Image 1 (cartoon, rainbow, N blue to C red):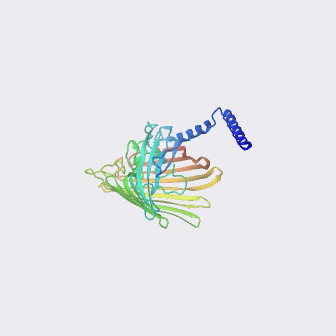
Image 2 (cartoon, one colour):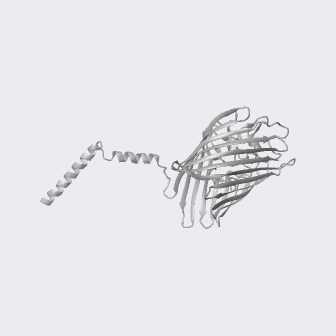
Image 3 (cartoon, rainbow, N blue to C red):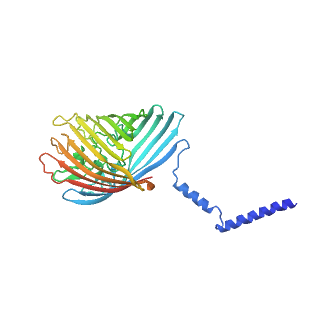
Length: 412
């Protein structure tokens, strides 16, 4: 009887203690916990099933662009299309020990596109979304991966292989930064001197001579063998390309290289500035780039060269080319993260299929750049200055174009 009474007494004390705690929490001991759970549920990315792993990531890359064409100058704010703001959904599912499957869906985001800015248009293009990637893949760990859908062709980014942390704002793709501005006295947009003719400057890759783009393709990517990877793709109407890449390190020196070849016989000229005859084009191009970096000092060099041939050009030079060089140093001088300093030079020689209708037009560019990584925030702050000198036979192009871009990219 005494034992039963003791148990009852303990139970009563426990109830009293719980009641007191509940009173201290406003009458509901689980309110704070339930509120926190509801908050997490509202912010969590939900998966459609339990078999496919979902990863959500991306970045925001916005910048301030000051420009001077020799007659007018101004300052714009917008999205840096060298590495456009985006959000990405990646799915991954394991089939067995050797096979897996997944998908990539990536949406580009733009507030005001810098690749569409000019002297009369500070927005470039209205804010909006665009599909960059929408493809599924099937992978074998002993062979490689096959992609189906809209994604990078084999030669996409083949001209941008750099070991320094500069690819988010400083590559050979100057068209994405200032390509729609007009060189005073010529009426030709800068992208015309880079190998392109698209008047509105939106969604055009013709300025990247030697490099592919995103297309609706079937693509194969091999596994890495002794540092080498091979890729091949075909698709669209009609396009095919192949590429070989390498990455390795020897005696404290990192090396990365890549080379690719692309042929397109599409019925339009929107992508690669190719002349169409009877509804057909016949263009080919190749590109090569690479970089070396001394790990101990951070000294590095990156270079790229691309050449495009248009077999439908019968009068004048049927070839166009570009060369890009970047050299600098990348070291962690501050606790914040690594600092990158560099100088750069670029030249273009555009053949007879140029927007001036001349035998050929040329342009050179020089520039300097700075990037500061902030490790704690997964962020980069950057500044880049560039000066362009264009040349058109028979036209006075004394006025150079210059630009200063300062911005930041933050990952999530």
